[in-house]
Length: 186
Picture 1 (cartoon, helix red, strand yellow):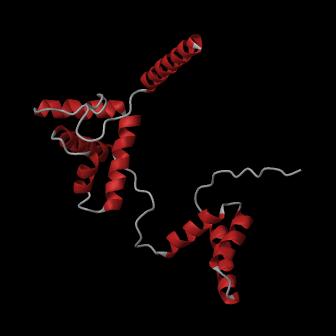
Picture 2 (tube, one colour; picture 1 turned 30 degrees about the horizontal axis):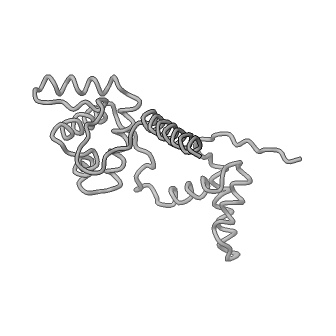
Picture 3 (cartoon, helix red, strand yellow; picture 1 turned 135 degrees about the vertical axis):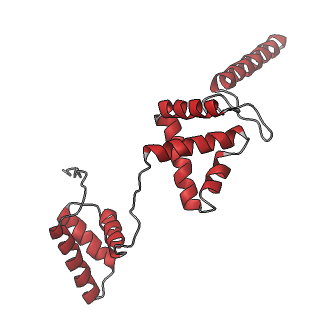
C-alpha cells in the first residue's frame, strides 16, 4: 500500500543544504547530465520539492545584486497605492490603466500594484476606509470600490443566478402547459 509523503513547509537554506546542492550541480555538470537531475537529487536528500530547489539555485546564482524575490509593501506604500487608485477611479480611469501609469509602463510592476490593490480591497477594508476618509478630507469625489458598478457601455453583464433560474423555470412551465394543451386536443 502506498503512503502519502507529507512535505512540511521549510524556510531558508542552511550551509549543509547549500553545499549538497552545489555538489550535485558540479557532479551533473562533470557528467554532462542536465541540471534537472541535480535538482531532483538535492530535493530527495533535503526533503524539498525539485522546483523549489531549482528556483533557489537560480535565485542564488544571480549573485548579491539581484532583487529580492518578494518585496512586501509597507503600510505607507499600501495607503499611498490605495489613495492613488481610488483617485484615478473617481476620475473614471480603470485600475489596470492606473497601475500601469504608476508602474511607468512596466507590466510586471503593474501586476504587482494591481494585485496588491485587489488584495487590500478584499482583506483590509479598514485601510480602504481610512484612505477614502483622507481623500474626502482633501475634497472632491471619492470612489467607493465596494459599491455595485453601474451598467456601462459594452456587453451587458449576465443576470444574477436567481433571475436566470426563475426565467428557466418560467420557460419550463410554459413549455409543459403547451404540451398539456396539445395532448388534450388529440
